Image 1 (cartoon, rainbow, N blue to C red):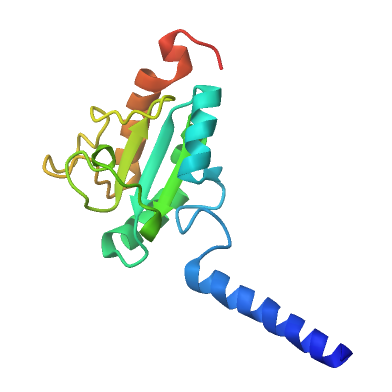
Image 2 (cartoon, rainbow, N blue to C red):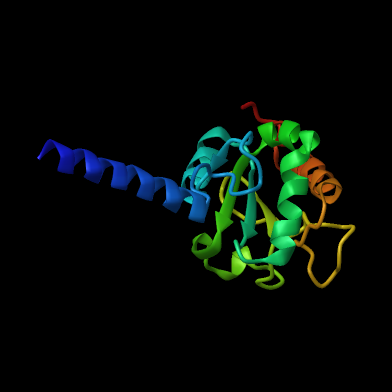
Amino acid sequence: MRRMESGALVSLVLSACFIGQAYGDDDLGRGLGEKFDWHTLEEGLEISETTGKPLMLIIHKSWCGACKSFKPKFAASSEILAMSENFVMVNTLDDEEPKGDKYSPDGGYIPRILFLDSEGNVHPELYNVNGNSKYKYFYFDDKSVVATMKEAIKTLSPASRGEEL
């Protein structure tokens, strides 16, 4: 009996490891960086409302070539990491993509990054000004993300609204 229990335990542990590798569930970064303080969208919206911090939402897919190209650039950026302290960070992968028109203001392409205020409102005026005007929320490098993050901090942070954290 003891031998069967330990065999079942080994199988369970190995299965969990393989499932984690297959789906990248070892962290919420999902290729976007483990050093960030990632949250699920539901958690993030609650934290944003409580703290007054704006929310940065990255929508991406595991199978997307553009997403795969973008992720290491985002993850390696020390400037994005430092600025992320001003945001509640959320990334949604595959089926976690939020539903509703507000999350796809100019289409459902990926990857796209949206900025939300602490009341959960998407701010369509915060987009990649150096990108394609047909795909405003598409980002291909870290520099364009940093530029929009700076604008979002000016526009959405509690300090810019005359509030304290």
